[in-house]
Image: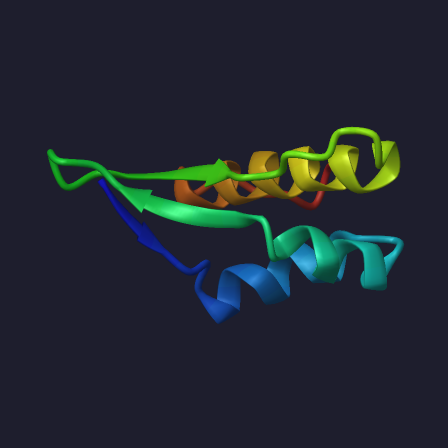
Length: 78
């Protein structure tokens, strides 16, 4: 599997839906695309310190929104 950075347009769309932009930008540092062996893309995260609950939940939210964008779905309703 190959790690890839989230595309800028994807980051911009996700950031536009976030209330706390600073926290969202920090969360994006832990989220990346994964190119699987079969060529498909998925979203993953590497966030170890779950004691930072607010950041942890935003990381999970970014992963969810990125996965929805990959599927061609809207993220305006979340």
